Length: 488
Image (cartoon, rainbow, N blue to C red; front, side, top):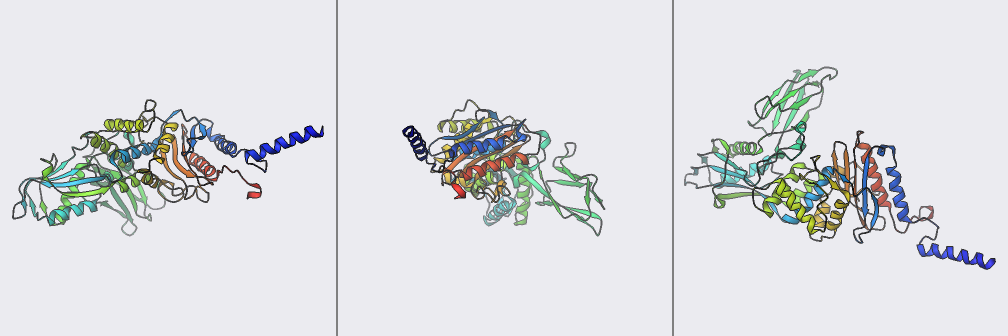
């Protein structure tokens, strides 16, 4: 009997030592899965579909999986796909250009034809950049332009919204019109300042331009606001007429509101014409659409690097940057004009080169703004694994992602956890959808890939973001060696 008992005790002890858990703890991987399951057992998921997958990119081992094969609406997690394809097709050294051209310049500084402004898909062009181009024109010796300012947008097709975008999101700044010649995110900013002395409201347009017209119907409220302030661009008004209505407290601080404008290229051309005048160049013709007579006519350039663009795309989740990237890869991999449809084809070809199945998803835009997009989390995590293994692309790709508790759309999340300053991930949010996918380093120093989305809910997305942050914390604390006793 003693011999049997000794044999049993020895077998149990050997099994414990072989498993690497001398303190009798459970398998760390089992605990990891149980901890994530506990988060997803919350009552907020009773009518909501969670899709979660965690992978070790070094070995390809799947550490956790829940519904990763289901089609979901990725929201801005689609930008992970678009930016990866953009880096692959265009390269990390690619530059987005904007050019100035003219036919001939007389000795007296007169251009007797038109002055051309052509866009090549830079989503980050600003008024300051147009100032710089205007000064370049002046330094080139141009004093007068007898013709028109011709804006060339032939690099993209003429569709300025994505498939399935919501008409009632207009004129929100996250749904800007898409053009290869874009300025200030194709928005203007209104600075609205109540004056408690005169009991009036002062409205300024930034940049100051004749392209937009503002009509204020705003009234001053003394003690409380009954009708909140709104800024609209009514279809019944002349194009780019902005109407401010409602009430504002007399003691309110100045407010800033961004509003999209229509016909972005004409907006850019108009502001450029105004900046030319400020630089001493008389260009008093009309601003019209047209085409450069040929590449030889392009004389001056503004360039913007891929590294800056992709960081802005992912860190702040800029929809316009994603859409411009999608059409740019189409125009570059194929030929202009770049279209969203051709861009999607180019993305799918890239995914195929990564060894991913492209027959089980639907992509219609680059930003994830459309509810027509359908993606599987297993495809997304497999893409993240593939990018992890790309030494030429991964450093910039990884850097472009928001960092938990530090910057971008994750600035205020994961504070005071091991995920803070650790997680590099892309957020995503549209009605009824909240997503978060990216990379986290565990306690053993290994990087893990995770993808998760929660969809079909009517509660505040804040609850689902908190669940995502808890899961990120669990992953950051994960160790193959398991927890030691007494917290050691």
